[in-house]
Image (cartoon, rainbow, N blue to C red; front, side, top):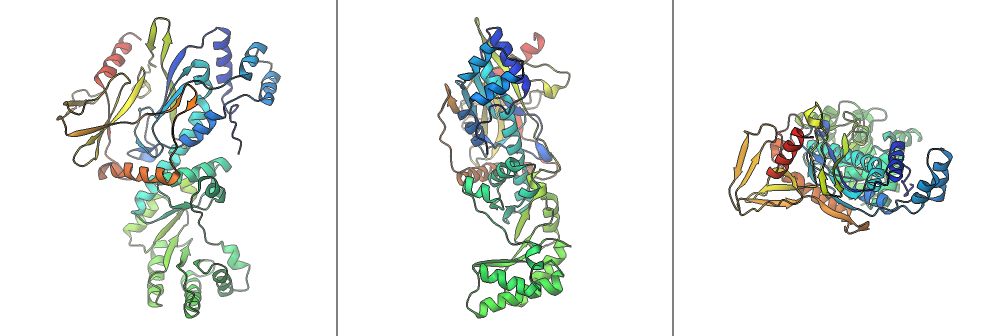
Length: 478
């Protein structure tokens, strides 16, 4: 996978850069990366993609081949191409850590840099953060539906390309999956690789029982047999039981073993298979299910009493089939001019598309006694929230909706943390296992009503008093 993604950008980023260059305009600016609507009808999203974004920024440079290609387009002047030869990112980046529960309109990434640098990185940052946050959020929904049962990510063959399959697998782990079928993702990110065998394994042998015996001999410590190639209840499960009996009689009962169902009525088949396995003396044999699963089907199967212990989820997870786009945007919110910092706002007839101006940060408010999430507050970076004082929360649109938190009853955490300072990486990246654990804690801080798969309760994202006043001032005098 190419680590230098410098040219993975929209053409107009480069033409704008040349415009800034020709006009001798490279002011320091602030850009915010945020999204407007939670994906999949969810009550929240999971931030992901920061690790790859960091790698992208670290490798950001124009190679000689890149310069030659740009020269061949007959669009860029030699003076601008000379500038690109020594181009490096020199700005600051702040971001919410991967695995953080996030909500619409709040900055997930904040870039403070000369405008040519900030403009160039827009497309790639959006590509990385949008995709991986989408898949992490989808995985969180699937794992929520599984109610604690393990979920395996099995989607590589249906992903939209190698990068989507590999980095999507990583995002799925952040969202809660226990492992992936993707061996490259296992190597790159040090996560468990999982899988059984295909129908072709069964079909390549003279009969199903022989296929099962050969598989069990090869993998005696982890024997999961696919039982639906011919007839699940009259052939597959009985043959699997026969192999389990032979292993037991030989003193080779696997430490992990069971069957996989990949078609048919999974609720009925799993309940019948469970009875057969238990009756044969194998109550600890696990039943794994796959077959175009998503959070809704898993939830339905759970409600029907399906006896499924492990879920293998592929296409609908890795592609986020019902919601294929995260919708993140990257907007200018301020410029340093000669007279000082000038906040900027984008005005639209659509209220959701009106941006929040200025150099901002995000504060998360927790209830002190339970550590449950109460609200997020987007504020100016110069503002602070003192938990020893009363906090007024108000809806920035329906301003009459207010909540007052008494002093010392809440806890405040700033979500945006420094990633790059003056172009230098200052962030120590946690392991993927630690990110997954952190994400689990984040989800547990949400009220149950906000974790519902359908019609979840909305978490308040408020504006500070200072940001609210600045926004209204600019709306009156844009």
